[in-house]
Image (tube, rainbow, N blue to C red; front, side):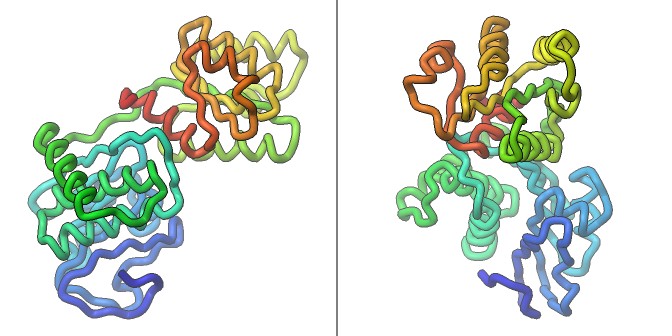
Length: 300
């Protein structure tokens, strides 16, 4: 693997631009490949092609000379693998923890190893890459033993054979309610980040500060409760143990609405009622975001 943008000329290449909205085509610096696999995030695909939906992005990428495989990564939805003769969605392997930094690198490395070195077909190679990325985000480990890799191969093959040529999983219309304080810069930043991440992945979000704003309790509270009643999952930030947030969590559980709680600096003693009412609690923000997504998608 090469980090950076040197000009390369090769028989077979796996290219991951890793530049988000600033992504550039593999050939933009004069690089060439007889056979090219392009692995991009949804945002990178939009930047490279101007298209919006994954299928259109993949078809546009395949128009470039030498490109035989296009993979569009779409977060909790999985990834679309498109070749000249086949197309299939690869589903994610949900994890109990999501260490996001480097996960895209691991996916691309896993695909490159399976497709370039082991010469596995692109769809099966992508299943292996998905399983490898899941192992990485779960553990944070960047090295796995040969036995572990063989287990990942077997699990990827099982998933592939069980699910076959998967279709795209539509994101349900289920609304995610963001519960959390927004009275300081750091609190507002956290809410903004959560809302932005969820909306970027295509999920419906209700955020009281964004969708209602500030006002008199007699005006705000009924609208908050209406938002809660219309939601299928609550994603709550519990740091600081804000009374309003705790009320929203309790109300949601009384209505049997699942709650994903992020508590980075809250003692277990302070979470007795939260844990005892069957809320899912994590001390990691990214894990909480993905847990909410997987709950909506029906994966957990």
